[in-house]
Every structure is written in structure tokens, then in C-alpha cells.
Amino acid sequence: MEELAPGTIAALAGLLGGVVLGFAARWGRFCTLGAIEDAVLGNDANRLRSWGLAIAVSIFGTFMLNQFGIVSISDSFYLSSPTSLIASVFGGLVFGLGMALVGTCGFGTLARMGGGDLKSVVTFLVMGITAYATLRGLTAYVRVALFSQPETVEQPASFAFMVEKSLSIPPHVTAYIVAALLVAICFASSRFRRDGRRIGVGILVGLVVVWGWYSTGVLAADEFEPYPLESYTFSAPLGDTIMYAMTASGSALRFGIGATAGVVVGALITTLALGHFRWEAADDAREMKRQIFGGFLMGIGSVTALGCTIGQGISAASLLAYSAPVVLISIFLGAWLGLQYLVHGSFKEPLQHLFSRQ
Image (cartoon, rainbow, N blue to C red; front, side, top):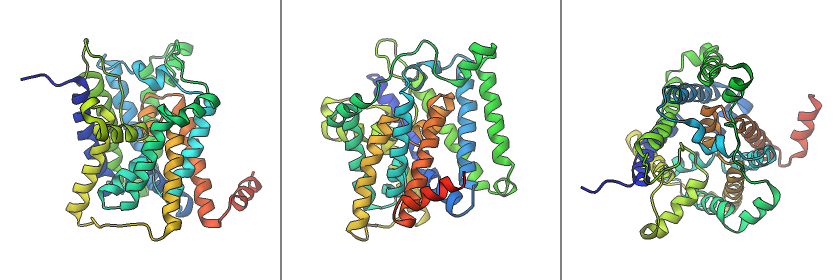
């Protein structure tokens, strides 16, 4: 029997974890924008705490892999070729604004597709094509002209390695302390402690990100055909999936392609099992315009920032990458501005309200 190529192994592993993420999105309502909406508009931080728990679990598991020499996390592009601060902020803001207009992120778009949302199919196509164009196509010229390109660094761009250099504390010790603090913050809420579904989903998503590092770093490892270390992100892989669908005979499978398909499959299975599947479409041209423009912004923003809410928000965060908090804060601010725009019809009132509180 012919051995599977590393890319095929990675794609199958990505598919498996993607199915779990699709389940988490539909059954546990694991959604970044939904978490922000709950906190900003509904004064409910439980979904944000679930997100924080996912980050804590992913940090703990990822640095365990690194500590015992199973995976060398410094090989990740988040740490070896980080993007600039300006690109991280700009990309995060643009992505967050687009996310608010669409009503979810790239990951959520895939989950909605699995539930029968036809407008999300349009958003997926727009975001995927725009992301691919920003990475390798026409808009890549603009990105290159405006922002410095990722450069290889001497020291991994992670807070854990920075602390090691400054204080001689092993990276895994710093990581475990950060993870423990996040868990403490999450479980400080009695309401969250009683929410078994949110707790379970947070743990599950964190473990899936660790699975991503393990599967690409161990299962797909090949001395003769090296495969890059990566975990879950839903920005450039959307474009890769579209390209693979059109050129399968002349291209190779990758982890992100399997992950993208897996989320849709997992969401579809879950919605069918729960009886929630139903066909949906845009109510009018105005809504469709928001979906298209929002997908366009998310495609540009995610590639510029080297990741999305899952890519930077959990995968990069699991490495304690410098870029993760910068991009996350920028995404949250962009999403807040977008939500306020949808509520008030302009940016003027929310910005005045924001600065009046300073």
C-alpha cells in the first residue's frame, strides 16, 4: 500500500479536528462575535470566558508538547516570521469591522454554511478569494507596499521565550502560569462555573488546537518531504480550499483545506442531529451587500494580520505569540465599532461616547 503524502495526512487530521470545531460552533455556540455581542450588548461574559478557557487549555497542551520535545513550537510561522505591529493592528481592525458586518468570523461562516445558510456561501467565496488575492494576487501588491513583510527572527516571537531570555525561567513554566491565571479568571464567575456546556466547549476547542500542532508536527512529519508546523486558522485556508476545488489534479492537500471542510461537515452533522438545519438566504439587497463587503474586509484583514479569531485568537495565543494579544484587541475594537455602527448608523456617536468616558 502506498504511503500517504504528508499533506494528505495533515489534511485528514485537519478534517477530523475541523469536524469537532463545527460541532463546538453549532452545539456550544462557540463564536467570537457572539461572545463580544453578549458582553457588549447583553452584559453576559460567559462566552468570552469559554473563549478564555479554550486559550488556557491550548497554552497548557501546546507547551507540554514543546517541553517534552514532541513538537518544537519555535518552528511555527507565528514565532519564526511574525508580521509587523502596524500590520497586526490594521489587519485586526479591518477584520473585526468586517466580522461585525457579516455577523460572524470566517470560522463562523463555515459553521453557518453547514447549517444551511446560503448567504454564508457568498461570504465564504468573497472572503476566500480576497484572502488569496491579498496573499498572492492583485491586492498582495498593496499589502506589500503598505506593510513590511514577515521576517525571520533570531529569538521566537513569544512572551515565554522573552521571559526565558530575561529571567532564565523555562518557557513552559511561564506558559503554565499564564494558563492557570486564565483558568482562574474564567472560573471566578459563579455563573460560568454552573455553565457546563460553555466549560465543555472551551476545553474541547483548546484541545483541538493542540491536536493541530501535534498532527502537523508529528503525524505529518517527513524528513524527505517536510511539512510546516501549523494549527487551525480560517483565513488563507479558505482561499486555498477554493483553489484546490478548482485545481485538485495539479495541487496538493494541506491541513487548512481539511480543516475548512471539516468545520462545514461537523456543523452539518450537528445541525441535522439537533433538527436545526434549515435553508436561509439574505432578506434583501442591503443585507447581501453587508455580507459581501464584510467578507471582503475579513479576507484583507486576516491575511494582513496573519490570522483570524481562531488563528491569532487561539492558535497563536497557544504559543504566547507577541502578535496574539495585539490582533485580538484590534479585532475586538473593530468588531465593537462595527456593532455600534449597525446600531447607530454611523461611527460618530459611539466614538464620542468612547472618548467621553476617558
